[in-house]
Image 1 (spheres, rainbow, N blue to C red):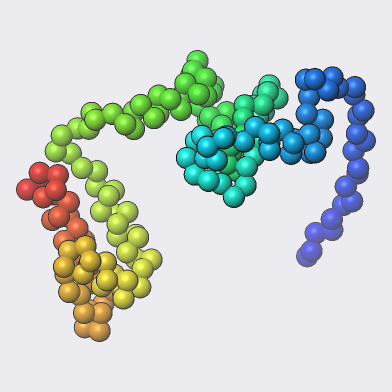
Image 2: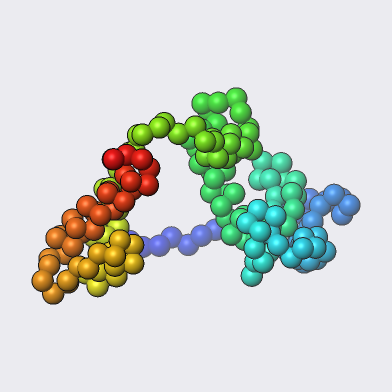
Length: 178
């Protein structure tokens, strides 16, 4: 049974007087400000790319304009901020930017546990290969490990297993795990 849609009631706009020295009041103001304040380098300050679309970034809690960044950076910041607000903020006294800074420091640290590899790496690789065609697995095996896998003589499962054996062997050798 098809659900009937209910008509949306149009909300009335509230005409509050805004100080033009403090507020960007409409999309034209935003467009002008964005054009005037794009980074002179032409690169997004976050991704260091020349974006197709620039966005005027602002803090949703305070309304303060932070700057002009790529739409991709703005999308990522917004999603990360939602994760922080939904799952993390109630568990820490740290601000969103402090958590992101700590995460970056953690990811860049060299303090890995020596000689320990996580078993999920092999399972993740298997899942990736399972989504590939036999031809793609054969090409990957040849390019990565100089391994010839005959897709006419082998099942996909046999090809994946042979690839994973070489993957593990190479990974263990690279990481000193022999």
